Image (cartoon, rainbow, N blue to C red; front, side, top):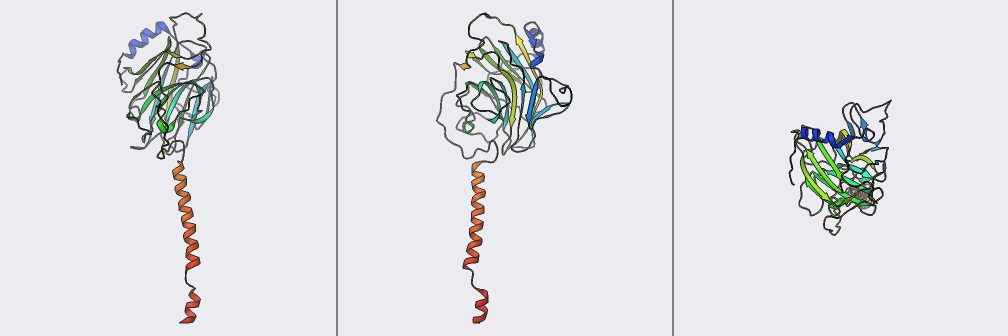
Length: 316
């Protein structure tokens, strides 16, 4: 993981001249408007809104929660600054993680950290699944990005690394301080920075050039638990419009299909029987069925082949 540390206060001062907070895409405390509504936002599934955080999933198995902005983002260059906390009781086993989205469609449940597979747009994945899949070398937690046009399958058996544009290992789970993430898209370059220590310093996770993302998509967040679980809490979600240094009249930026010049090298899909993501695994179900069948067969054999006790007593 490459490190490029910058003081956050300095960033704020500089950003004030070039960034503009877009309140219609922003979510900060106090969250609630009238009743249980969130202005400009939809939430569903296991998501719970409190005074201090929005919990997408509790530390319980087989939960899915999501949070989506209602207004398409008609901006060319932007930055998301998200504050979050991932924590739970698990010491060595926990999962699955959460995702920050900028996609064409919204509010659809699915198998990719609670949201739909085969999405169109950008997904930033904060993967905490402790029993990682596949033959990759990186540890978890792991932050990665996928740029997709609706035809890419997120392969949980390979942790999605067969289709990522970039990724890095960052220890953001069960920390005393909240974690801050900056997802910046400007001039066809995607940059992800994190602050995990509460020292007001950004650490660069990755930077990818030649990335195309059109305007008019939706910002969102989703999370999921399977056999393993965690609390996934969103503290704040801020979106800034960045000053455009290019030509706004340039053709295609409003409607260009999502694309990235760089992708991880393709690898063969090999199903992982150890995967327990997204609910009870197939092998667990088969094991339970086997135990039930064995028990029934044992009872049948016992009653069919046991000696006739009453006949035995008459003979003796």
